[in-house]
Image (cartoon, rainbow, N blue to C red):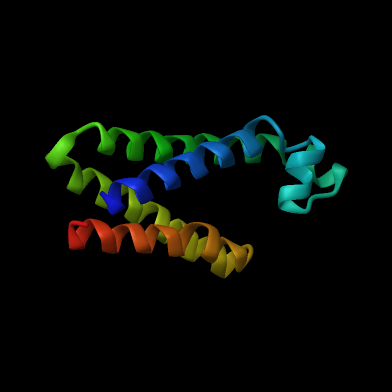
Length: 117
């Protein structure tokens, strides 16, 4: 039960990131969330939309895992592992805040999935 709640919350978070990156990147809310200048946001909006799409795929995979019942463990582990690795990479290369937003929640969810709680 705890694992499913964490998976759901992480999926919702990645839907939010999708919206920020695909629809709000050049808007005040998107620029504020990522601390972007208007010029930088405008020049990188296509790249951000691509990143947003990937975050949407991660969310879709987590939602899919929640709909699969008992067979969902492998699916959830795969997508949570992807998010964890992306969070580690993003924290090391882009912004340490990504560790706390992506990597740590994914790690906690992975622990809950493996512990079957």
